Image 1 (cartoon, each protein chain N blue to C red):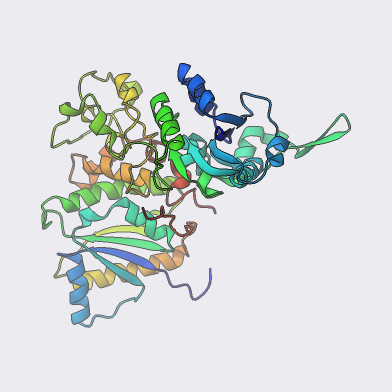
Image 2 (image 1 turned 180 degrees about the vertical axis):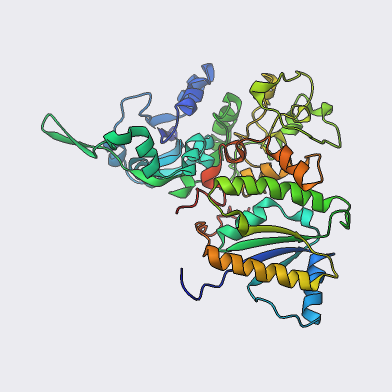
Length: 147
Length: 312
């Protein structure tokens, strides 16, 4: 592993909680690892397992899914759906030889900017020990010709 | 002049060839409409016959099977040069199919398991003063479009006679669909399912049951009974034949049009109807799915985002 390996983390953050926690971390001027790329989604329940695998196939070393705490979902049930998908996806990833630490599901509320900071820092630390993802990069997407 | 057609198989079980024969009397109509220029499984054609044809002289080549070894890759490339239109015929050519599950292992480990201490077969043999060579394995199984551009896809393991018949009509007719099209309806199997009305609106599963460990009720939605049926995420077109035989859909018709990774989508659909909220409860329901890779990616591992198990 190269000494200067900086893991790339794709974060799918829900609009109502975790994305706001990242905003709060920013406005509070908290310092944390700059390895994350945040993608705002309306709900953690919107995070299709395809998004996670697509991120890995395009060079992510880790994926963070952030949602509201159980019971707090803006859409009532979305974060429970995220939890179910996450658990099943983890089983699949394990079969594919992907270390479970590469995908994390975290409940981080809009008030928890420092928790977001800790989670990202911790993930970067873990991924630096694991090293770069061994998932093969996907060739560019083949799209059918426009009709 | 009748259009010239070729049939070829790569890493396949022979079921796709069989389903052409299964056209029955309609096969005679097909043979009248086209000139079969190359079909090694049924008739005595050799590779050199194909090589001797001018480029782009075949109108359509139907290629079934995944691409597992060097010879299949070479034949696919040769067919691409000789044919104006390539049709990936069946689940293996379209998505990688059952042979694609070999991507849960690597080719070295497969040979070690198959041949053990005796070692893999030699690559060359001397026979009657000539040398025969065995094609080497590629390091992973690929769908057909992993090695050549493909014009159309015919889904199914195998495609049903009706789908095949319709494909011949479409491809030989004047109005061909846009390139890249999958020649089957673009909606989920549930819409064709005879048990459609029996699925409750708030489907909630507390326990997954395996086919061999339960009795499936013949008139109720199979997923509703806790048996993994991939109908909600699988393309229609098979006329729900497995369901009619009281067996769940395993997803051989692959994804509908806007899905990029069939297995991931099927996994997502199934996970979202689990009836549990606590960490532990969700985990124990999920544990009822013994082999997620083999269940959701049964036909599609080589065409999925991950394609294969990660190496060391």
